[in-house]
Length: 84
Image 1: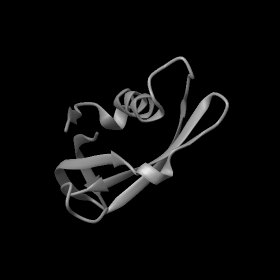
Image 2: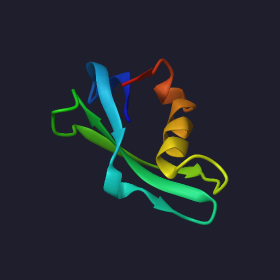
Image 3: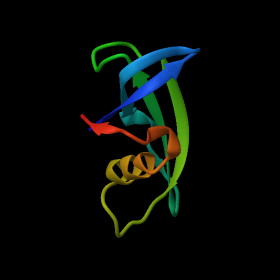
């Protein structure tokens, strides 16, 4: 699961950057999910950037990865995303 966005890194435009949640970065709190997002030029490259997030989490909802991606898709910096 990943999304693609037009990103910028240190002033350089990176069209269709591959954005994914690092699998080993996800952890759960009582009602929160903590995770790290990795940015790559494409899915086979090393990350050029990363960001950490805290999102609401519900035991009654989808699995933590799905809830984390749904949270990302609502954030202003991910507007215009495309599912990969």
